[in-house]
Amino acid sequence: MCWSATADLVAGTAVAAIGVACVACVRRARDLPLAALPLFLGVHQLVESAVWRAGGGTGPATLAWAVMALPLPAVWVPLGVRLAAPPGARRRLAAPLAAGAATAACLAYALATRPVAAEIRGHTLGYVVALPYAPLVVAGYLLATVGSLLLGGDPLLRGFGVLVGAGAVVCAVLWRLEFLSTWCAFAAVAAVGLLGWVRRRPRGPAAST
Image (cartoon, rainbow, N blue to C red):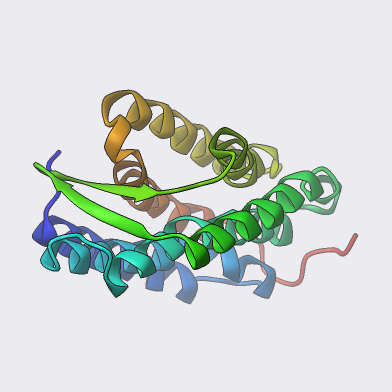
């Protein structure tokens, strides 16, 4: 698969449209943050289209892409999973949420104090972000995002977590320098499956812990 401004524009528009359908199908308020994830990821691809058109660099589009790729999902995903999870699963989701909050704080600080640059590398984009304690930050990020999906207590979310986790491994092996861009694109497409999750959710408020 090749990426370009046009490819990101088309993919982002399609995923965002499905995200709107996910939000429209929500039956419980607690499901809304997770149901809105495809919409968020679709808009993220549209932002990357702007990065392509700007020729990469360190402009506003690059910074916006990095904020949407790094600190926001680290909190958004575990919080959304915990809100949507059955009461029996919420206690074990406290760890991914705490890891996500700490990771998001580190990432936000790094983006606020250090430059982030995008480089066009053939048919992919590479993002250069100077992260302190990078292995620890990446571990916290994956625990928050993939880990929360695996621990969420829902078979469809668990399957989504396995798919996104496997995608992270493949993207890291095949596109080491372009990992962030390729994995985010993969996650956006994979998030289309959340429409099925939203449609099978029960009506009415979830039981409280």
